[in-house]
Length: 362
Ligand code: F6P
Image 1 (cartoon, helix red, strand yellow):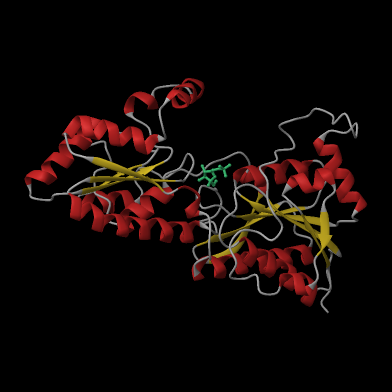
Image 2: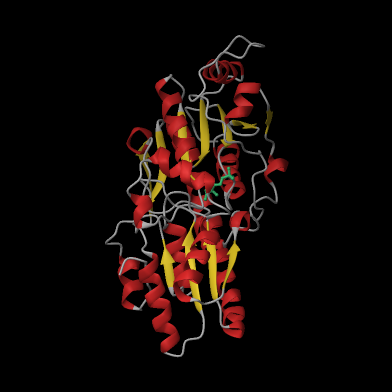
């Protein structure tokens, strides 16, 4: 057994589930147990489990056969302990106080948090409170700074691409505009990758505010060229030029008043602009569910194994990352509270424009 600074480690998964979480848990726990003899505690339902004291010791059997499984064996939640500093009347403690108490009670030397922006930002804030934290970058949105890619993203792209492929056949048969809305939160990575992979004729992402008249002209032009159908890929965070001028609060207010999600609105706008029949598919949680693609299984395993080595070395306060195909780690401080958006000069946007994709702006 190799020497290790960490003797007892907690693992939690937080935020939306993503394909590859179980592969990452397995990578951390197996390496921690088998190479370093660590005790591994699985915390249930993200930070909520630390607040409520819900956990279990993971044994080798618990992490057998989970590599290929979607979701997370530990459960997850969107608990943000620093957002609500109120004391719980039952315990008399704030969420952060409860977390620190459970950490101490379990005798944890460190905690590995698997999640996206919110999870790793909370991890950073907990490290400021004196806890030893290592983060892992998980999200189908791929919007974490400090890493080239997050696990879960490739599987979501594959699911969305397959959906676009299937829509193509119906679009072709019925001469329709098929609008497909994909997730991605405030970033356009998922829409961009799936849109390019699926040959979307129009791709709308939050980073490029759209003008419906420009899209209308593009689709009408396609009709004139004898192309009887069009596929429009809309990221859930897509905005019109007008909306892009609004502050966050006003945009939120208008969105709350909107009938249906953004995909439905774009379809209505395009029907008005072109006179063509439009149909909408909102892919939703299908993008997060199911078996992880091999790429995500491999990436999550690499991240998990590296996290265990960092635990052994006592390298805390960092998020495991991948840069130029090499596994590395970045300080949590550098990524905390930040979102990685698609740069306008991104090669894939230029490639899309080169093959005739309309991004709604020209
Ligand atoms: O962050 C992952 C994600 O799936 C986003 O793409 C989406 O906006 C959000 O989570 C949905 O959140 P919830 O699971 O809370 O509905």
